[in-house]
Image (cartoon, rainbow, N blue to C red):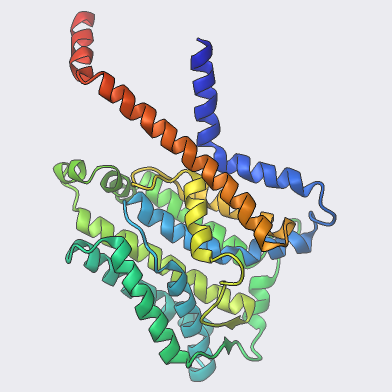
Length: 341
C-alpha cells in the first residue's frame, strides 16, 4: 500500500511538472529585487512570446508524431516579409500580417506534402526547408535588418498593457489567447482527437478510418501558420527584424523543443498539451529575467530537462518490463471477465 502511494505521488508530480517548474521560478523571484514589477513581468513575458508561438507549433506536430524544425526560420521569414511589405509597399499592417501568415500556410502544406506523399521523414523534410527559408531571407533582404520605420502606432499597441492591473502586454495576451484556442481545438474537436490518435498509433488510426495524410498536413499547416503569425507580430512588437532574430543567447528552437519535453509531450507522439508547453515557456521567460547570465540559464534548464528525460526513460522501461513478464495479460483479463458473469 505504501509503494502504491509513492507511485501515485510520483505520477502526480510528473503529470504536473510544468506547473511545478513555474511555481519554483515564482518562488525564486520572491528573493530577487524588483522582480515583481509591472515593467519587469511585462517585458519578460512579452520578449518570451515569440518562443511560445514556436512551442505551440512544435507541440502540435510532436503530438501528431512528427517534428517541425522550420519553426524558427518560419517566424523570422514572416517577420521580414511583414516589415518589408509595410515599409516598401506601404501596405496596412493587417494585410502584411495576413500575407505573412498565408506564407506560413504554404510552407506547412509543402512540409505536409513532403512527409505524407513523398514519405520523407519529418526531421529531414523540415531540416531541408530550413535552408530554403534561410536562403529566401537572404535574397529578400540582402542580409540587412528591417525596421518599422517611423510608424510606431501598432508597435505601441502591442507593447501596451491593456488590462491595467495585469502586467501583460497586448502581444503576450494575443499569444496566450491563440494557445488556448488551439488547446480547445485539440481537446474537444474530432480533428484534435485524430491528431492524438495518429501520433499514438498510426496503424490503429488507419483501421479507425482516419485519413492520416490530411491530419498530418493540417498539423504542419497549424505549426507554420502559428509561427508565421507570431513572427510577424514579434517583428512589429520589437520594431526590427533580422535573419538572426531571437537567436541571441539560447537558440529559440532549442528552447521550444526543451519546453515541449519538459511540459510532458511525448517524443513519439500521441500525448501532450499546448498548455503544458505554454506554462513551461512562461517559466523559462521568467527564469531568463531572473538569471541574466546565459550559462546559468542553460544550466538550470538542462538540469530540469535531464530530470524529465530520466524519469520518462525509467517509466517506459518499467512499463515494457511489465508487459514482458505478463505476455498473456489479455487472456488473464478475459478469464477474470468470465468469472464475473
